[in-house]
Image (tube, rainbow over all chains, first blue to last red; front, side):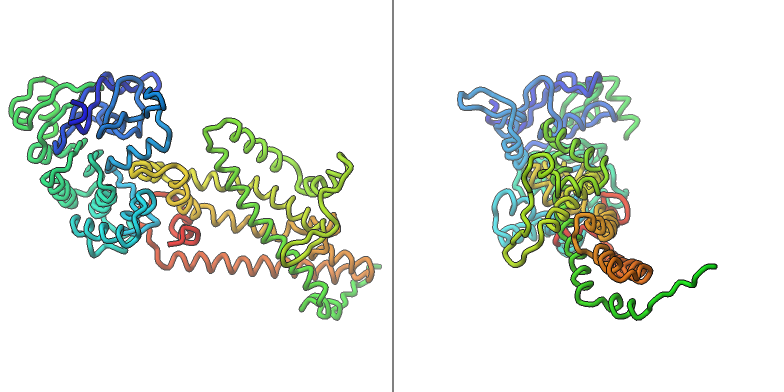
Length: 256
Length: 262
């Protein structure tokens, strides 16, 4: 079963100091599936997303992404031991991650941001990487910004470059951490459009988002987190027309 | 009665401005030692700063002890220790009479002096580099991790080029200091600018002339460096790429390019 899932997170626990932010989260994501995680701030949704590529370590539970036990590797005897930095990096290179605050590298141009990892990590030639990058820039409609530094781009443009940067590694899974929350309202649409196209193209995606329109229109499944657990999950129709929990109803009424 | 000070302008203009051959050599030695000591100081500072951030406690401890000791004792004491210490405590000379390098030779004192200044400078640069790295937004390293970079590569390609922007202004000040601190090498008989002046004073008794002269030459060096610093700043602020730069302060905008190489 695990082999067919892109994400198989089972009973994930995580504490920061004495505060337990994740209290047993289980989530399975099939290939080509788009899952949106919603919930109030402090519900643990961003922390959970970050555990999926080991930006946060977990205290308990098990996460398998694309066939790899996240945070662990097998030693000679097949026993799972804590992952070395090298194996962590290898697993992460197969998982795209888009930040709320873009985190583009300001000393590199849009193009250089995109070709950095493919050339340095995948060992692609510069020409090959540039060709791919140009294609990606076209896909996110920023071909004209090829040689522009991030500081000269709008938030929406930066976020689209950031998405292209992740895609350049040909990830099996894309994780989005509130990708539009730091954007001016008028640039949110252009980022969502790119994400929609990705979803239509068959990319497996997990998005932490407050964009209910996007969740409703694009996702296959919506997951509501509250107090460190998954409160409720289901199809968008179920969610937005007939949520089960009172807490979900409250949340949706506030946000819609 | 106060005797009018006689200032022999001919001494000043014959030997100081422009400097005669011997003084010119002293000037070059001052400049050369400064550049070499600063270069290695930056290198040691970088290594020390990286050690400070290591997960290995022993490396953090070593770096801490290094900074603590060399910032906590006078540089003149360090210079004496470096040059004479091995002989005094262990009975052998650490530095040869003449040190030979591929294209040049210098006296052991010059080498010892440069080493002492470099190691001392490294302790100060360590703190500066650490602050520079700390000024780079943590999201930068995270973004590097998410595309599969390991720490070393991310440090070299992503973090350090941005830290360089923050590091450069204090580095400029450090070099200004270094130009003047080399005068302490007079105490171990290195004929840099100050020692050159002292030697001339002791043979001519033209105290005010040579003292004023050496001050003018140091001013010349630091002023030129000041212009160089300003020129660098201007060049970098011309094509200001900052709008949402993720580090803070002036330098982030300007100086990353110098070391980042893009």
